[in-house]
Length: 149
Image (cartoon, rainbow, N blue to C red; front, side):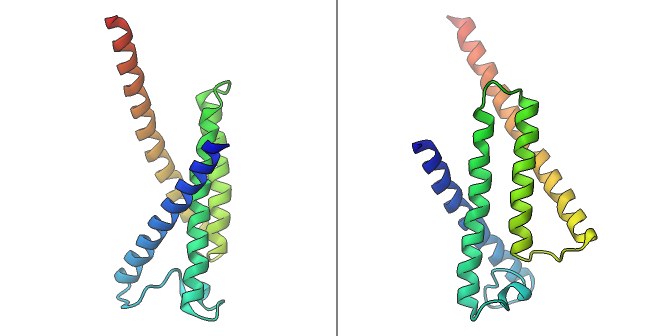
């Protein structure tokens, strides 16, 4: 239970940190002098930019928790790495996509959703590849230590 709590807190803090800095980056790239936590359509649903920013912060925290908690799937040792990866992909894709739609990051149109999906897959594959290489390196180091004894 403690591990779940730690992953939840770590995910919430990480999501808030990443979301805030992405909002800062996109605000700056769009030539704005104020922080826009999301697109103007999202902000228009709230009474103030401050409220919109607070709601966006909660959404960023939820996104971070999705990725953090979904890592628990890789701890199910009786499953193959393929099964773990496919299930992790499905869980993160469905939950993150839902949060992205609710946050109005893009309109619910096929072309936008297709682009989002392609970008998500590319990022997922890159991160998965890095993590697999790291895991292989760790295993090689452990095996090397075992053969030295």
